[in-house]
Image (cartoon, rainbow, N blue to C red; front, side, top):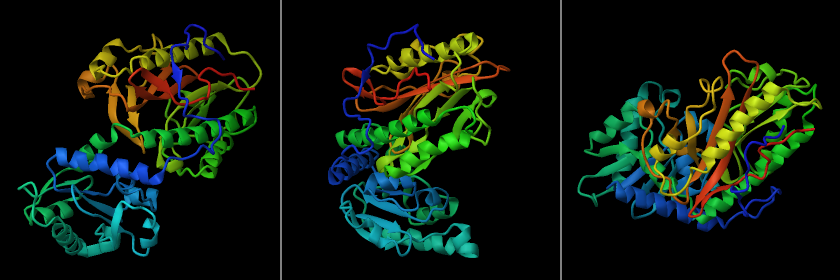
Length: 415
């Protein structure tokens, strides 16, 4: 299915990308040093002495290390102490000290003190107190005069334990977001590598798409390509076909894909180097021509995403984007995504730009800046209809405007 109502000549494709997942990765030392420098600067701007980071995404950003990433998303079993000045201390899962070898950002590795109920049982307060004493000892005399610490995740037991020592705790996730919003050149190169692996996996899915294959069997091709290239996991299971595409956000299943079905997917993958790739495509299964309705709904989504990509210009405010963004026409408007665009790096990141229907209720203003990587989304979906179309592009904002990072065609008819 092709969309002929818009031209794409004004959109640029990244020259950093390649169709091969074997693209050369950036120098690891430069990558990790650049990220740590930005994080320290963000801590200093927040007038903090240091930060303690539990989110495995933030730990990786600060230290370059990864360990049991999915497990530690819901079990706070490792954390990093990052001072504005001084050595970074990684508190890792016991027995995992060797995993930090070669990561020069990590000056010291200690065993983490955990107090979530599974490991602490009735000793939660005792273990949290011990944890706080160790963190306070690392803080030492305050350089800011207020002993301020940024922490991205902290339960009441940990917060109270720090407060008993007079520590001023602020939101560390906001600090990390401010650091991550602008990508270093090495990050852009790593994102390009992750994108190349994703494009390879999508090509494998396209080659495998034929009536009779199940949604899960088709989805497995992208998973395989990601793992083979050194990628990690998928945050969602969004590949659906036919009537499963509407309403959107149903998950991949054992449904058999039939000829004439639309097949829509959203990659949501944590790929090479831990960097996230979040793009969407919608294809037609089988050899039949698309129906008139399929063409109409596809064109609505295609026009929306192409138009809105061009709004990602440095200097535009989020409100500027919202006021000029295209939404799909009725009857496809009511179910469209609330999100026009969102930031992305090691996962979905600041900013989140909501459309005009949601901006005043839940949105916030800001400015598009060169160095941001943004995902621009579209969804055309009619209430009660059989199918939806989901499209999404990942772009790098440059001084000259947005650059599309994927080489996978947006409008494509699989064979």
